[in-house]
Amino acid sequence: MFQKLVRLTNDMRMRHKLLLAFIFIVMIPVLVIGGGVVAYMRQQALDSAVAQTTNNVDKIKSQAANLLRVPTDISNLFMFDSELKEIVNKRYKNMVELTNAYLGFHRFEEYTRQYREVANIRFYSFNDTLVNNLEFIPINSQTESEEWFKATRKTSAIGWFYVHDPEDNPMNRLSLVRKITFPEYRTSGVLMIGINQSELNSMLSQEPFETLIADQLGYVVAAKNPSMVGKTLKELNLGFNLSTIKDKTFKAKVGGVPSNIVVDELMPVSSMSGLKIISVFSTESIVKDANRVSLIGLLMILTILIIGLVLVQMVSYLITKRLLRLSRHLNKVARGNFNIVARIDGNDEIGQLSRQFNYMVASINQLMNQVYETSEKNSKLELAQKEITLKMMASQINPHFLFNALESIRMKAHMKGEKEIANIVRLLGKLMRGNLEIGSGKTTIKQEMELVRSYLEIQKFRYDDRLRYDIHMDPEVMGVLIPPLIIQPLVENSIVHGLENKEGGVYIEIMIRMEHDRIAVRVSDNGRGMTPERREEVIAFVTSEEEEEKSRIGLRNVHQRLTLFYGEEYGLVIRSVPEEGTEISFAVPREGEPYVQSINSR
Image (cartoon, rainbow, N blue to C red):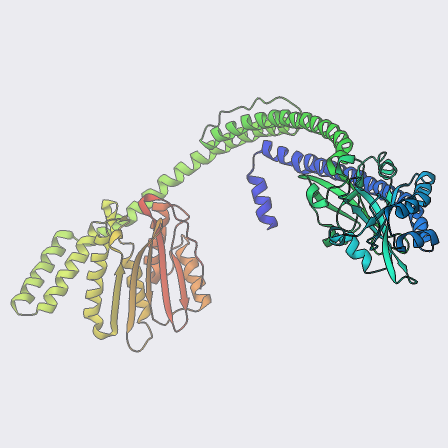
């Protein structure tokens, strides 16, 4: 992975490297740190707002508890008030008697005037001789159907409900409701003390965030925004359900705006139900200042980064411009122009590289002239020697005498019915004719393999069943040009050395395949093979210029002609395993393209 990264980096242009280095080393770390600072500031602002709201809710909770203690104490007094007991349990014979009783009872009015927390006081009774005077109210079926009345009838504890009174003088406010029993009369009634709405709202009017108080039925009994009073939480569509939320502080969308909500519960003493204190503030309003400061800081950071990016681009442009000039000079040298002089100013590394480039070109130019002169002399001498050798090989037998003699022998054998001998003589003539035409330059693989097949048939005539062979050749390689007599010596080597010191016969396989941009030729046999030491000796002889081992002169001739035609990179590959056989192979480029093949062992 690391090597791939290094390779990818090395393949990139210098300008891109500098740009990526600036991005990863400077820009990204600065942006990450800036983003972290912004997130930290936003979180700090939110935590501070939550803490402030929690403190405010605790303060409201304490103030509300003090406010509700007054009606609670008043209700405790009425639990044992004899006048109240007398007036609600007496059976009145006429309206005069009832009116005198109402006019003589002033407790409700006294408490209302004395305590600003109390808006009004009522008592609901089952005494059907009473008449509704907005203080004493007979209980009817509609009253019995109210939720607050049902809850109060089940217990003697205090209930806190927002009461929607249908009477002519409606209550419509948070009220204390409490069942009061009269054991002597075996009767009971419900005391209702209405809380002054202005006192409740005044507690919330100075709150920085939207704050409200709701009863257990979900009615808003007090709010910073008075228009919310009397509505249910469901009607306000706050976006959360208090019955499913257990956390004191949580997040939700209120009116589609992400907000933080702080909820606390007030449970007064001796109460069967409590009140929920809810404070809501939008996240955006809290982090607005932090976002503004962060935006200013971010703009400053971006400005600095852009300036740095421009400077990096300028520096990279100046560097790459000079490097490209030097690269163009190198390309001209690569194309063979050694009269180039690089004129790149500066004393930095690029300037030093330019001067060293000039020194190098001058030295190469001088050495090239010397090598060219020497190489030209050696090449002429080597080509002359090779041409003489090939011509000597081709002129060892008088062509006219040879063909006339072979044709006479073939016709004589044919006339006497010796068809096999006649065929062998024909093949021999064909083989010799091909050998005499090697000075023509190159031949096709098809023509070369016809000579090889003729040679194999002649050898099979000599050795009979001791020699078997197979030829595998791709059709598309038949027209490819190769040097003449380049495969036959390899086959001859396999026959001579494969049958040497081996009982039984030898099997020779010739395979010519097209492999991508090259043509691979392989001649293998199942003869005695060679030891690694012997194989190394053969390779050393084949690649040397000394003429010592006459038995391998054909292999050396093939190797030298391959390197002569295609360059020093080409030659024979010899593989051999003792008692298993030998394989000699080479490859030539397709359509003149070079193929590098080195000599190695299996």
